[in-house]
Amino acid sequence: QVKVVESGGGLVQAGGSLRLSCAASTGTFRTYAMGWFRQAPGKERDSVARINWSGSNTYYEESVKGRFTISRDNAKNTVYLQMNNLKPEDTAVYYCARSRTSWSTGRSPLEYDYWGQGTQVTVSS
Image (cartoon, rainbow, N blue to C red; front, side, top):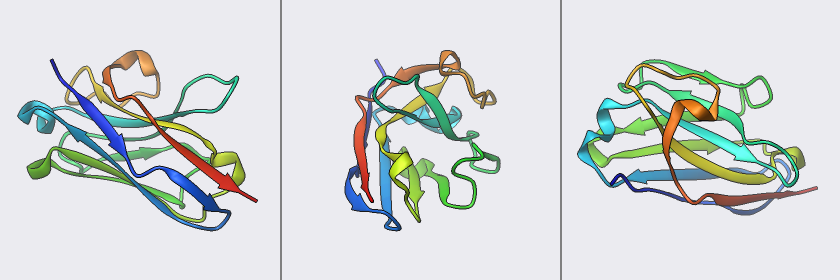
């Protein structure tokens, strides 16, 4: 059973920064693409950023492009999401998930099979 655990969320003022981490329990982590998603109250879970197995390809939603950076350290089985210039509309529960394949970096949550419990990010204005 693969376990995925997020950390690093919190309360920050608009314009501030946070770094989220996602640790996976298995060494096979390095062979899979990974994604960060977020879900605000009353809204669907949406893609934020995705990264392929090697870290050579990254993808971002327009709303976070230029402010967020996804990266990974396969030696540590960890994926990161650096979030800068945070805005109140970034407030949500952030989830990390493992793709079903090494190459699939699609936007749909259905393409991801193992999910963490989520970490709350709150941005005050």
